[in-house]
Picture 1 (cartoon, rainbow over the protein chains, first blue to last red):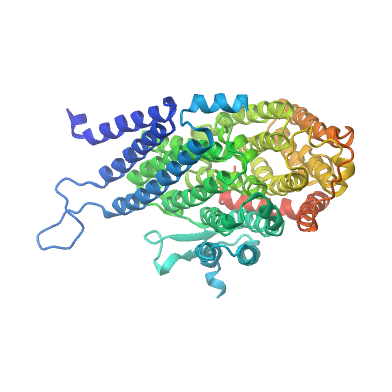
Picture 2: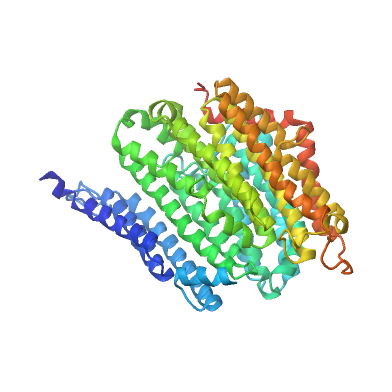
Length: 117
Length: 494
């Protein structure tokens, strides 16, 4: 039952597939962004999982502590989260402008309008 | 001072961006500052290029932290070459931008527009400079976020939708890259590219590393618009403001190709990528399809900007084809084409920008009579078009010639035949534009349309002239490309 011990990686894979599927399959522009966020978050969880050490604590020198979690992936993911927030904001701003220009945020309706255009 | 050039290269544009953002409504001043910082950035790129032209490597420790712990900026002949392309194009696009942007962007947004442009520029420079895998991801996102904003500023409402599509696909691409970097970090515990290259051979025979390679290759392929991952590109280039199309078409995909080269040759190494995973055989069919299909699609386009955008996808195919030969000659041809295609496509899109400025649009029917009304612009378009086709005495020919040699050296004569055939396709779609501009009567022949203003025309003509200059005096570019190729191969050439 070794694979059970790696359950967080299974969660990562599941989230990644769910998010990616939503990005591809959904026609609603907001839902696509939600999918993209789930997809990105799965990668964040992946990085944090790989930094984990059984019994490890935060990397602060304390008496009696010898095992530390690796802080570098945490720092990387802090940066990646900031990037993700910026991307979501950008995406939502674009969706607002799409709504203003087309009156809808459903992909097929938008394409229909552009063909008639 | 000189030893801090690498930091300066990215700092100039990165710090100028927020300053310009705060200018608010002072559009002229914003343009002036942006131009100055682009020129300064180009000057630094020239100095750096000069320092590494002999094949030496500059290693710069960001903030004084020694690699592999700190972030290292490493410059060799390969990325100095790409920096030169970015610098040159941004320095030339700025004089062009002033009137083009004044016409296409509302005045209250011009300062913000230039601020986003500088961020995109800084991001691309950063990707090229850095020797840290995670840093590459961050700079990718900086340039991408700014590019989405720039594309969304197009006048057509479809610009916003194209920017959104680019955002979705671009983010998937960079996230794939991030996953790949995570796998590499699990196995090696380092993010420094040089350090990675040193530690990878020990663990390269694992599924994790092969998965990392896959994720990174697919992620970057999305960013560089490798067929069939190119779907974001035609719309984005078509509806973006003229100046943005010029800049992105000449730099964004080129930088992504450089990153692919850096990972394939510099990190994973020639043996792992090409001998163990036979990357050449994976890339070649995609490159061939990527040349043929978009070229065919381009022939049937009625909007010239869209036509050239599809041609850009095809040109990416040529660059990937050169890589897929897995030889020194092929790699040289690819690196050469980065530069030659950048100047050619920038000249073409600038000519299109001039046409948009006077005609308001560039569908083939709108172009009717442009040959007589705007002789200089159309003249530039024709000459740059010849370079795109690959006619002798133009820059395009120099690369086609090297690609041909590389194909024959590898004994792949069907590819050589294909190269000639696809040049004919390029001739076909350029001819379509020429035909309607020179041989069709305009609908309203009383309408007076003057030649594009000098500010737009001069950079266009300069770039067009450079396609001829680098076609006739090809040895400078070929020599630089060869030095860059051997820097990437790192001595371990096949």
